[in-house]
Image (cartoon, rainbow, N blue to C red):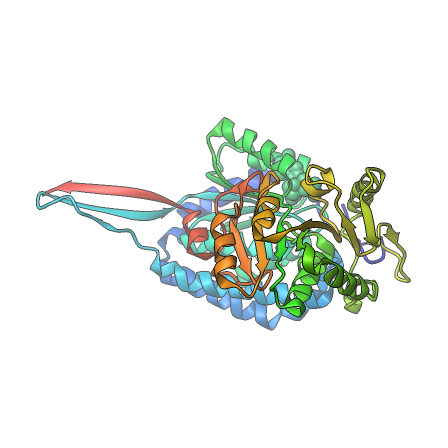
Length: 456
Ligand code: ADP
C-alpha cells in the first residue's frame, strides 16, 4: 500500500498490506513466544530491555521524528516532543517491571493468602494515525513490562514508526515473537486481529464507531479490552483567569496536531464578562498563523488525509448552514507545499444541542460556548456524551477544584492543558470509552490477578 505525505498530498513510501493470514502468523508467533525465553526472564531483565530501548530511542529520536512527521503530517517539533514522551514511556515502565507485586490477604492464623499479578497473555494493540508512535508506546511498553507478548496493528495512514520501534526493541534484546507488527487496513488486518480467538486482551484507540465494532467482536470470544475513543473536551475559561496562560492553553489545546487529538480542547467554554477581549486576542493570534508542511515547523500543519479534510469541511459547512457564526477561518486552506490543510477556525455556537457542540470534528476547529459564571460553565462542560478530558483556567483554586470534582472526565487539567506525562492515568468515561492507559493503572491493564489461599 502507499503511505502519503499529508503536507504534499503525495505518496512517499510503500508498505505491506497485511491480511488475516498475516494476523494468524503473528498471533501464533506471539503465543509461542509467551511460552519461550520471555517467560524465563525475570521482571528485572524485562525492565533492562525496556531501559535499553529508552536509551536507543533517545539516540535515534531525530530519525524517528522525521519519519513520524512525514507520515502523519504533524509538525517536526511536535514529533520531537512525541519522541521524548515515547522514550519516557519506556523508561517509566522499565522501572515499574520489577515492582508489580501482589498483596498478602488477612485470613487469620489458619490460612496463608496472597494475590499475584500475572501477564494477561497475548495482547492486540490497534493504533490510530494521529499519534502513531506515542499510542504504540503507551500500550506496548506496559504490556512488555508485565510480561505479555504483543501483536500491534498501526493505522494504514501511518505504519512506519511502529515497524521501526519493533526493530529497535529486538535490537535492545527482545526475544523473537514477543512484539509483532502487522500493517494493513482496519478491515483486512484490524478486524481479524480483534476477532482472533487466541487474543487475551485488546487495547483499541480510535473512533467511537470502530470502537463499538471492536467491542462487539471482542464479545464473541469474551476478550477483555480497553477502549480509548473520542472526545469533545471542554476548556473552561473563567473571568479570573490568567489571560495569557489561558490563550496559550487554548491555542495548544486545539491547534496542536491540527486538532487531530482525542484529548483536544475543542470546546472553549468562556465567561461572558471577558468574552470580547479574549476572543479578540485569540482571533488576532490565530489569523497570523503560518500554515505549511510539517517538516518546516509552521504554526499549523496539514491534516492527515484527504478524507479527514473532507470530514472537517463537511462539519463546518453544516454548522454554518445551521446559523452558527464563524469568527475566523471556516474553509480548506491552500499552501505552497500542496497537501491537505484546513484554516484555523473558530466558530461561536448557537446552542448546546447543535452537532457543532456535540460531535467530534478532529480538526483545527474551535467551538465557543459563552456562559455566565462557574455553574453555567460546569453545566456546559458536562453536556455532551463524551467525557475524556476537561480543563479549567481560573486563579481561584477552590473554584477550579470544585470543577475538577464535578466534571465528568477521565482527566482534568487546571491552568495548563495537556499537563502531566506518562505518570498520569489516561482514559475516558461514557462514549469516550473505558479502562485506563499510562501510569501504574496502565500497567495493571496488562495483568490478570490471581488469588492463592493455603490452609496451614
Ligand atoms: P478513522 O476512522 O479516523 O480512521 P478508526 O477508528 O477507524 O479511525 O481507526 C483506528 C484504528 O482502527 C486504525 O488502526 C484502523 O485501521 C483500525 N480499524 C478500523 N476498522 C477496524 C475494525 N473493524 N477492526 C479493527 N480495527 C479497525
